[in-house]
Image 1 (tube, rainbow, N blue to C red):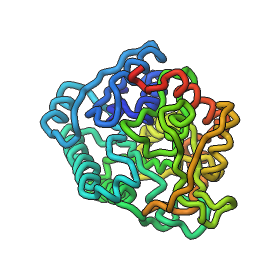
Image 2: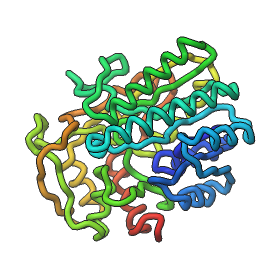
Image 3: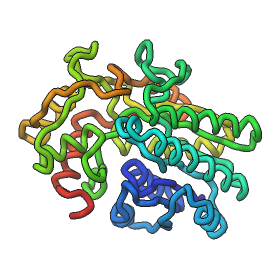
Image 4: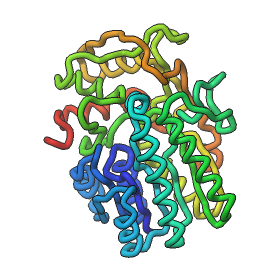
Length: 337
């Protein structure tokens, strides 16, 4: 069974490729490498001892996408490709709407033309907006507080409308909470271009000496220590959730949404403290003002995924920090090493 992985050279994509290959699937990757390195896929081959097909192309390039679908026999698609930084989306909304939504429309149109109607979509907990209560269930009201979240919300609706128009489609919407960690081998991990937008790579780069100080955005939230609380999930657990979703598609379920999280919330300072224990050094940080679009608390009720996908997050926060530190320590400059 051949799986096309869009954005497969990226952080979550590369870890998912490992789990797919280990699960016996054939993997075809398309990535424009705008925020990823081809070296991640070389490492995937090293880890698994298996090959995959790679095409450097952009989903906005319909001709390139058509050529890939004509050449390869694709059974299902896991769709990761997209811009993904909340803060950047506030300053660059047009780029986010154009890239994420138009790219998905072109992908779905090419899939339809070639009779490929099974998709796992990389959605986000941002589709819940600022939830009234936690933990968050899949049946909560949907909204968004920033352009990035709105692109995810709009794409979910587009995919639901697509299914309503033709119920041969089967689509699973995976709403991620906060992926951190790295593969146990230390060969692949989070490798952002430029200054990291996400918390953990910023912490690891401070620990390794690439950055001087972590910026903590807001310490006046209604949380135990005033900093934002999030549900941090190990990227390998997240990747395994995609394999479970591909298995679920074989049942022809229609459109289903699942939270992928641990069900436990940790504050920014909880995470800093846990990482300090792992790396054995203090992490210098400074309190800054809140960022537009951020919310106080967000963590999952993952029971639906456990019941219907047979999936649970197995790795604790300490292991997430250990694996993140091993990756950064072994690769101080990311894949450039």
